[in-house]
Length: 293
Ligand code: ZN
Image 1 (cartoon, rainbow, N blue to C red):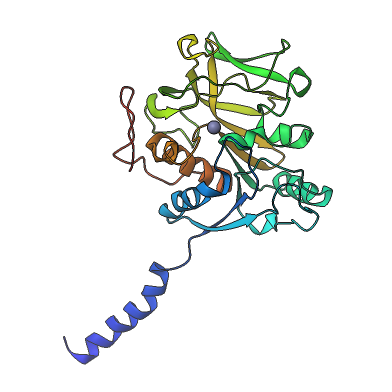
Image 2 (image 1 turned 180 degrees about the vertical axis):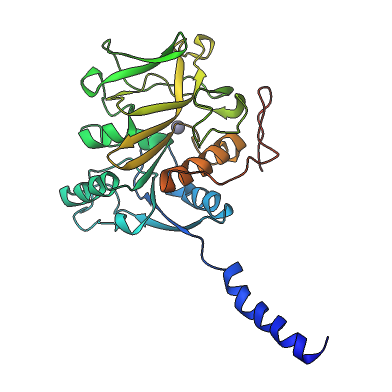
């Protein structure tokens, strides 16, 4: 190659290279620091972070709160600097100012992901209960709202009195997609297996503006309800979007491709309203779970 031809090629290489290595377009914040005694909390944050980074779509920061019982008044993440906030948190109340900033962020169009037992958090915070649609434990009951039920091909709510939040022993189970045209679930098989995990049942809450993306059958043989329980949900809150996944108890369960891929897609949707990710070849079908070790 002559020098005259080589120089433009070199220039192209130099100027094009930064585009290839540019920072990922979306900013995500994982909030952790306190968790109930049944879950690893901060110990799985690196996994939640890495799952998002693998998509090459997210630059991920972590905001860790003070420990339980410590002064929370200075805990004030800059939510509005992010496209999506992932909650891996169940602990002390945030300050009134931080709660207001979070509500304003979501109402204004911010994205939120509720990861597994983060739906146990803040049982007496009405806006939070609206964001997550339904939650469990924390002494929730009919006071916080209804059960979501899927009967005769449509979503209904059930206001009968009762506790909120339960699960039987861990087992592998099948998810059934109910919203095949939603960006999060579009292109996924109608039925796919999740590896052994808790199957949350009897969550309850306001259940407003919620699309149930996928359910799983809570079998009485596994101390379940005999109902098709909501597992993946998409909630509109103001201009914001919330993706709620009940999957992923701890590190081992986070290796399930059913968890990983729905979490990656749900987080992108919460951030932008769209999903650009392809469904990977190892995504499970209806019979066998798929696990990434
Ligand atoms: Zn759990």
